[in-house]
Image 1: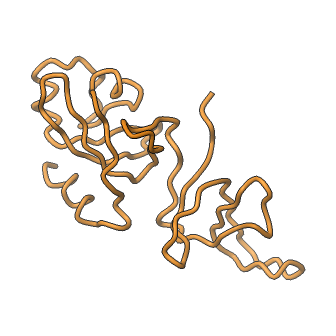
Image 2: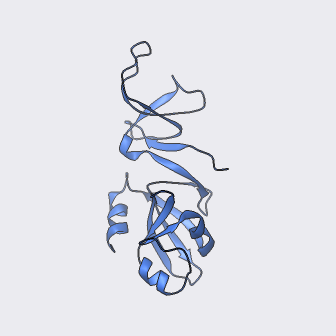
Image 3: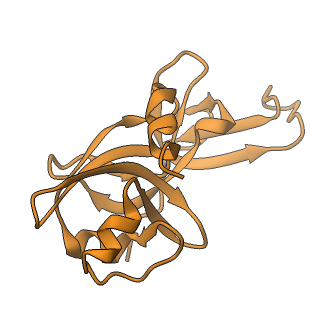
Length: 151
């Protein structure tokens, strides 16, 4: 079973991973303001306020370097044919890799399930070698622009 954890960028620019809590109302007794928080297993008071737009869930997979792959990550993936593709990890009822050049890849007979231009994340790792996280769309918006360039 996949480990459920989240990643989010703190208001200080640091990344935190762990449990996600979304506080809707101020908790006066603890001095906690509304917002999104990432905490370790100890929970409050060891929680870090994070920017909600940067929160992404762990896919349960790691890249070729052992780095955890999270929703919002940008990546490169080398296909068995030798061609390298780039894209972004998204959540669309399940985790998917959104791939630039998808149509070309599908026409060349990779054989994965086609859903627009995305691959189910578990099918993806079967057909690609050397998946590597190259950044995330929050710290480098150009990676997000690049993944949408071929839409």
